[in-house]
Image 1: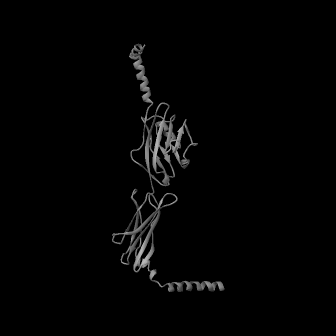
Image 2: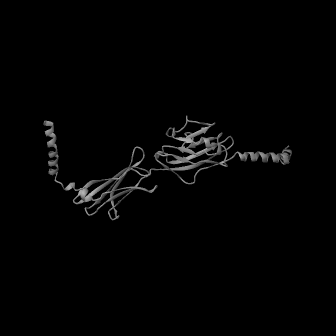
Image 3: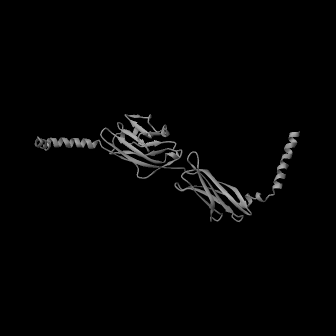
Length: 268
């Protein structure tokens, strides 16, 4: 009867059994700990996305799934003590791994090599046992230390004023460009373009107009995230870019003069 069942569950033996089973159940549950702060990954290098079972226990016989947008297209899948590759996201094949020797202490962190710009985003760490599962998310921010050295070049002329261009490539995220004169006074850029290259990195072109009196214009490009900078200096805009005042006829004369010895050698 219903009363007898109630009476049964009130007996000390049954309560003790339930308590023991509950303790066993709790001993097999866990949480997964990631990182509260974004993980910084540098293009071309190796990064580790931390994920740890708590309390510390073996993850050898558990299913470990790292994923991004699609849980069924994992970045890495470990199941039945094997790395399962048939459903793995193609972009991560050969680039991701677990620390197999540390699964016994609950370390289910993901190692990723040859970091790409496209690796930036949110990652899920999902761990499942026969009776329990937990997951956490980790943000990855991709950056490049610095791009190429800035190249300063004459772009246009107007009287005694020169428009200088400054270009550099291989930056991520988008860099900041600053022009200064020889007295470290800021020069105002007249235009700036930032383009995305095939590899996802950014190239930048910035332009400034300076007069003959502005010595040592400096183009400084900075990765604000990493606080790393590259710069180039023109030591004298007047001395370096004198050629707009040269007569085109004089240029043609020197070109022809240079061709005369060549013609003589050919004739001989």
